[in-house]
Image 1 (tube, rainbow, N blue to C red):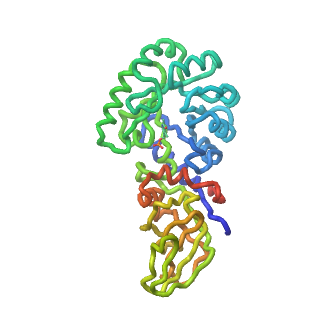
Image 2: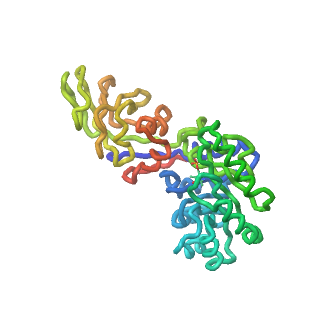
Image 3: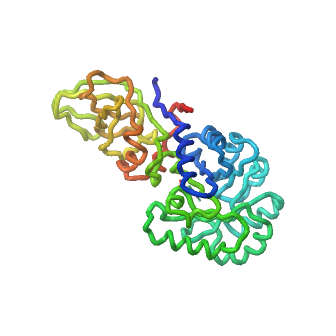
Length: 344
Ligand SMILES: *Cc1c(COP(=O)(O)O)cnc(C)c1O
């Protein structure tokens, strides 16, 4: 093994979907945007379709084409960015369902693909995407007559269960959609965990499928193994890496492994994380470089050939906390230098 290896456990992915699905009485879709949060839209979508997922969500039409290829005809693939200029050919060719975000998008869709399904995205307070209440009030009679595939909105604070914004958005979403015949959806992972009031006709989790918070009971889906390039011996007082940020306080053995911030192991991870030889944690020491990380392996009985930096003991959220970010960013910034492996 000469390159860092990212292994995706499709069994764990399927289990996470089933566990989330079991928490509701309604249908459960899957968000596979950004190449399924960096884990590979093809294998991830294929696995989830086999589990029974019939509604997939992507950010842009281009991503939808890759998902369609994986899942074949049948499942719906929704596009959060809606029907943008230049999307028409992709939407039609791949049978993608745009989530209309504005009057302008609605008009474009009606002119370009009048008989093609669409959904509606509403802004219930996040102020990011979707029709605002006034625009929706104007459009609703016309759109409703055409049976939208879904009317949906997104929660801004659902990872904080007690945040008053959750109930505020729930109320706004109800005011905007009560009485409509179309299926409704409000909840991603966080909203699903908030309880049945937030579930409507289907939920659409993303991060929870991939083993991240706020789904605390998620099974870890990703492991990352890093090959050791060299192990060296340091005398007391010698330093490691850029800025001399680590100093040996005892005679030490330092392993240099092949991955760095260009592989999503952010430089901001100043320390406080380990790399594992089997179950044995070894502290990451010194600064993380672009392609290299240094690890104190002094306490190992022999030099390791590889070290694991992401596993069940140290999750994406542990790395995220050390980097001052969120699990979503850790996953999606795992670059394409990794060799990828999938276990069924
Ligand atoms: C990303 C996204 C989701 C999935 O969110 P998670 O927090 O990953 O579950 C659902 N809906 C919309 C609109 C999104 O942008």
